[in-house]
Length: 185
Ligand SMILES: [Zn+2]
Image 1 (tube, rainbow, N blue to C red):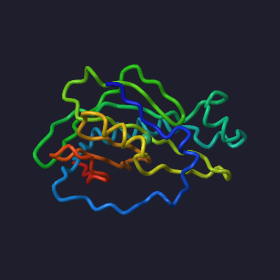
Image 2 (cartoon, rainbow, N blue to C red):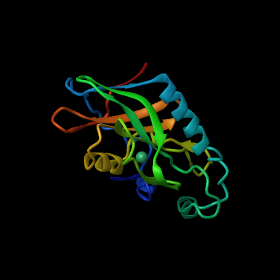
Image 3 (cartoon, rainbow, N blue to C red):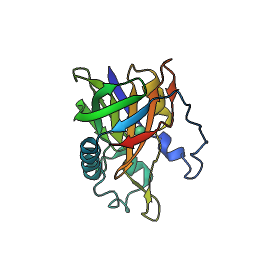
Image 4 (cartoon, rainbow, N blue to C red):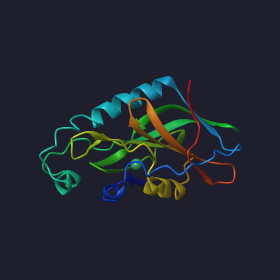
């Protein structure tokens, strides 16, 4: 299965502060347990994909989105490996997605041949606003959730800052639950 996630073009329409519609996490939804090692290596990949985010102040919005003039902060896609328990989805490790196509606001790749695959994760690098301050996409986008809903995966994570993730899971009935609880252990 090819996974394509991202906020390409739609990101321009997102107004900071309007993102949150309160969601109650249902009792039956599994919690995500992320191993400390996996979390730390994800943070290292996030840092790398987020480098130079503030070095595009002289470019206009379209130039930044196309990413052809000075491509920086490309999104990154990884394949999550772990175990599915009755009440938890345990993430033990991850590997980079195969055939990764990294764009400034989207990423594609696949995880077909990854053993113990439970889901995917990707980064939301900072974007610079007009004052060159960071805009952080703190949540999985509508497209991220739609892609997850169409997959057979159990969990999707986005890392939007160092050590900071947003998660969605699939419950026992197959329904997408977002946001999901995440613990680091
Ligand atoms: Zn995303």
